[in-house]
View 1 (cartoon, rainbow, N blue to C red):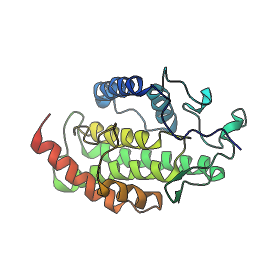
View 2: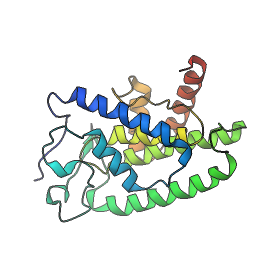
View 3: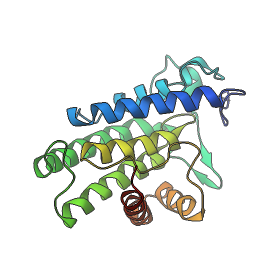
View 4: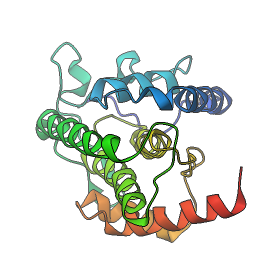
Length: 213
């Protein structure tokens, strides 16, 4: 039975909050570089989020469920969010390969349509960017690659996608967004249905633009 990691380390809230703020600033600064979306990119984010925080097992930070026998506590590590199971650990590596391929194909198309440092010029392209934010978030939630911290990483993917195309980082990282709408959208995504997340993200982005920085 793997050692569980279900909650943030005790007394680590301030450290994690500071780490998230630093990471978001770096994502903002690097957005115009349009780096390739990879699983390793997100693994680095996960390590940055929990840097300096004591974990049940040190290598839980940045390593993938059932990915590498060098990390035995993650082999066969299964997760649940309420009544919903995450993807079985044996399926995680292949699912992440598909995620990476899909993300790279999506940004290759959008990069041609949206100039660097400019927001989308028309409603259709804006809708495509919002859909990318929602699918990146939702698929990461569905796969649940890490022992913990998947929601934060999914929200980082959403903001990374928005920033790449000149939009503000409109998805709150911590604490988790409140309300039933986000909880229900995330539950749908756990089951592979990301439509509610698309609609919710469109509303959040609209409110962010209206309210300003």
